[in-house]
Image (tube, rainbow, N blue to C red; front, side):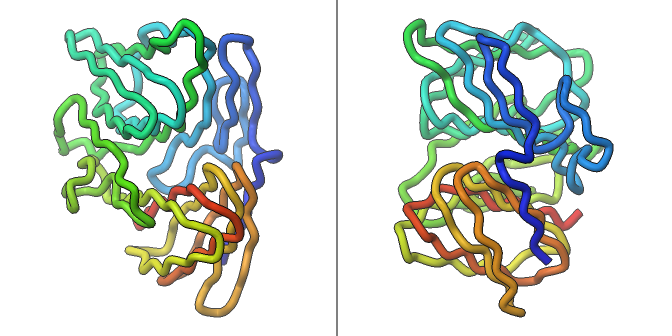
Length: 233
């Protein structure tokens, strides 16, 4: 089953220094039916104004994955770790209770645009505080996984996250690990098709809940950039 969640249905925020779209309940936006999906707690697309910053704050024990779409950011924590990431980078922070984290748009003239995901972390798993990879020019790239397969970022959870980049008319077939997944269009339009020929069209910024499907096909209707988050647990 495929259930679309359009960009217009998502929560919105405009604070001047920050513009955001929230897939799930976050900040001032609250929907008791949308507190996350399996271990996926947060899926935001956010634009930080030139020179803007998120001041230090603490988090629950989650893996925070930032996919930089435009601009350049710096991340710091209260333990002295710091790292910079630019457009085309995927950065993973393995947060810990009691440690605070900050984010800064390094450019004084241009906005920073990124997607941010929070994934529940297994309490017994410990990973490096910061991991970073650069996205490849590929139709499909595994960018995060439980075991760091294919040189992906290593998560503290049973989740597989794929970055998708297709030209118009191209298609990809996926075999999912379990009963749940989430699709997110970053840019472009596509169709998601199940073996039973259920078909849903997604436009730029739209997402979709995938339930009880072992296989899924993605067909690009325009040049496409998207994420597939495979969430069996």
